Length: 256
Image (tube, rainbow, N blue to C red; front, side):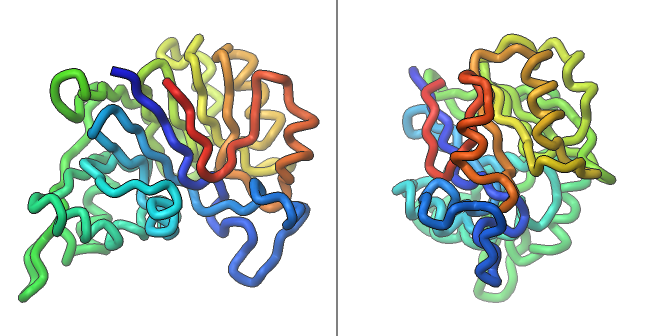
């Protein structure tokens, strides 16, 4: 069965425009410059697996007409990847069962601390998620709708982030770890979704030069740049990038 990946949000931690209305160098007339915080979804039949729950997840799922979520996999514990967890309650009400979430030990423990009411019954509010620790390889779903995920731990500033590899694609939204160019699991993929924050250097993310260096060494058929800051205008990137490297935009759908 065919699967697809939808980029629900491709903006950095403040989004574009920022909450104060600042667009930076982005042309506000171009809809592809309106960027919510990073999140994505893998769809295979009725099996729908979220990657991260950004603070904008409600708007993202409504915009993309996603009416069911089976599971969530988390890249790491930062607020722009996790603060939308609470929004998933209606899927629990609808499906009548807890939503499985997956992450490394640190992420899961911090989620349980920040969102304790989501994991433990509180008075009239039932728990609606169930925590699972990721493995190097694990499956979500059944039969021909099953999705196999492989995981790679990478450096993201002062923390560790998880790369998810599935269906000849990899999702690397938060990373400044150039050692990934040596990882055989990431070579010659069909799609590489890759962190690219700014033109300038950043202590926790790839900049444009580094992202292109990773693309050149991993040699995917196509690289999609995500986690884009307000400094990076969509058309500026489109005119500057090699033909097999593209800037992401909210709602971009990729057939895997």
